Length: 308
Length: 301
Ligand SMILES: Nc1nc2c(ncn2[C@@H]2O[C@H](COP(=O)(O)OP(=O)(O)OP(=O)(O)O)[C@@H](O)[C@H]2O)c(=O)[nH]1
Ligand SMILES: Nc1nc2c(ncn2[C@@H]2O[C@H](COP(=O)(O)OP(=O)(O)OP(=O)(O)O)[C@@H](O)[C@H]2O)c(=O)[nH]1
Ligand SMILES: [Mg+2]
Ligand SMILES: [Mg+2]
Image 1 (cartoon, rainbow over the protein chains, first blue to last red):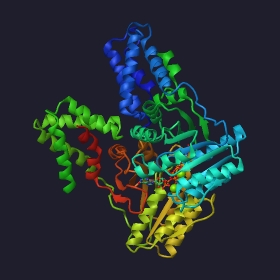
Image 2 (cartoon, rainbow over the protein chains, first blue to last red):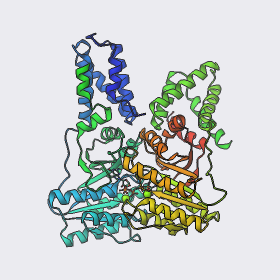
Image 3 (cartoon, chains in turn purple, green):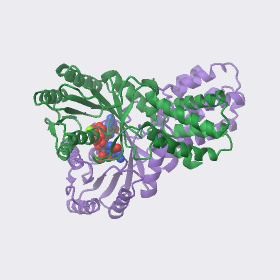
Image 4 (cartoon, rainbow over the protein chains, first blue to last red):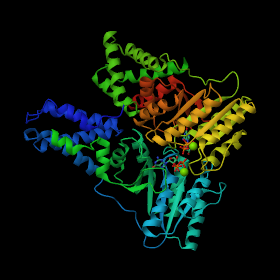
C-alpha cells in the first residue's frame, strides 16, 4: 500500500508518449492530474496543491514544453525546481542575540515533539557552539511534563529550571530568565505545553510568555505525519505569535511529509530543523531539495529522466 | 435518530444553496472529503458512487439526493463488520487491553481516561507501565494511576518492557483484577526492531492468558494524514488490532482517514478523544462523526 511516487505515476502517464517528441494540451493536462494526485497523497493541502499545479502549468507552457524535444524531462524538472523553490532555497540558521541569552521558544500542538526537540536543540547548541543553555519547564499541564524535560536535560547535560506545576507559566519563564542571567547562560530554551491553535486562553498564555521573554526565535514544532490540517495549525500559531521557523519531527517514519510544503506555502516561514528519531542527537538541518524529492517520491528522478 | 435528522437539516441547508446537483456540487463534495483527510482515492470513490446512485435513482430533487447521500455515508460507516464496536470484556479472569501506536498520539492519556471509567464502574483496574523508553513516560502513567485511584505495575526506566508486562499480567491473574491496561512506547510502524518488541509483548500476554489481549487498540491522532493507513496496516500485521481510538478530535482536524482505514482494512473506531482531561473520551458515534466531516461544506456554502 506504499504510495506510488510521482516518478511511477509520470512513467505511466508518459508511456504512450515516448517517441512522440511533442506533448499536446491534453497530455499536459493528464500530467498535471498525476502531479496533483501525487501531492494530495503526500498530504499537501488541497488548496496549496491547486495553486502549485497552476504555477507549474503556466511555467510549463511558458517554457515551450509543448514544442520541446523532451517534454517529459522538462516537466519533471519544472516540478522539482518549483517545489524546491517553494520549500525555501537553503538552510536558515537560528537568530543569535548580540547580548546573551539568546531565547528560543518551542510551541505547537499536543504530542508534536516540543520537549524532545528542545532537548535535541540544547544538545546541538552544546556540541556545535559550546553553548551553555538553560531549559525552562513551562508546561504545567501535561502529567509529568516537568519530569520528562528534567530527564531529557539530564541526558544532554543541560540544566532545567522549574517551579513545579502550581506557578503560572508566564511567571516561571520570568523567573527562569533571571536564573539564566545569574548563571550567564548564553541560550534559553522554553518548553511550553502542547495546545490547539483554537484554544484562546492557552494561545493568550503563549502571547504573554512571548511578551516577557522577547524570544529571538519562536519555533513551531510540527509532526511530519500531519495531514490537511497542517495549514490551520500553522496559520493559527503564526497569526498569534509570528513564529520565526518550523521544526518538522518524526521524519524517520515513512510519511511523505507534504505538511512541510503546506506550512511553507501559507506562512512563508522557513523549516529550520527536522527530527529524525527519538534519540537526542536525531536532529538535522533542513534540506529543501531532499524534502521536495521526498514529497514527490522522486528519489530516482535522475534515472527517470534518463529512461523517458 | 436525533443526530441523523440534524445532519439531514444541515444537508438541507446545503442543498438549498445549490440550484442543482451539478458538477460543482460534486467538486465541492470531493474537496470536503479530501480536506478531512479521507484521502484522494477514497474521496473520488465515494463521490463517484454518489454520482452513480443519483443517476441510477434518477434523483433530481435536492431532497432525494440528500437522502441518498445521508444513507450512503451512514451505510459506509455502519457497514456490517465482523468486529464489534464495544470493548470485549472477559467473562472469566482479567481483560487485557493493549495500547499501541506511533509517537505522541495519545496512548497514555487515553489509558488514563479509560481506566477512570472502569474504576467508576466499580471494576478492579491495573495499569502496566511498559513504555520504559521515553523520558518521563513511567511518571506520566503513574500520575494518571494516582488521579484515577488505580494500581500500577512499573519498573525502572530502561527495563525490558516485556518483563513489565509479564509481571502485570501475573499480578492481574493472581489478584483478580478485572481490567489491565498495557501502555506501550510510541513506535513508528517502519521500525522493525520496535515492532518486534511489540510482537514479543503481545506474545507474553497470550502465553499467560490465551484469550488475551481481548482488545488491541490502535491510537490514531486525528491530525494524521495518509500515513495513518500505513500505521493501521503495519500494526494490524503485528498485533491484530481490534479497534481504533481517534484522539484530538477537539482540534480542527476531522480524522477522515479512519474512513479509508475502515474501507480498506475494516477496522472500526471504538472511541474518540476530545481533550486532555479525564472526561474527554467518548464512544465513537458514526453519525456525529460524519456530521463533523461535512461541517465545512455546509458552512462554506
Ligand atoms: N520517531 C520519532 N519520534 C519523535 C521525534 N520527536 C519526538 N518524538 C516522539 O514523539 C513523542 C512526543 O514527543 P514530545 O517531545 O513529548 O512532544 P511534545 O510536543 O512535547 O508533547 P506535549 O508536551 O504533550 O504537547 C515522544 O514519544 C517522542 O519520543 C522524532 O523526530 N522521531
Ligand atoms: N487536545 C487533545 N490532546 C490530547 C488528546 N489525547 C491526548 N492528548 C495530548 O496529546 C499529548 C500526547 O499524549 P500522550 O498520551 O502522552 O501520547 P502517547 O501516545 O502516550 O505518547 P508517547 O508515549 O510519547 O508515544 C499530551 O499532551 C496529551 O495531553 C485529545 O483527545 N485531545
Ligand atoms: Mg512536551
Ligand atoms: Mg505514552
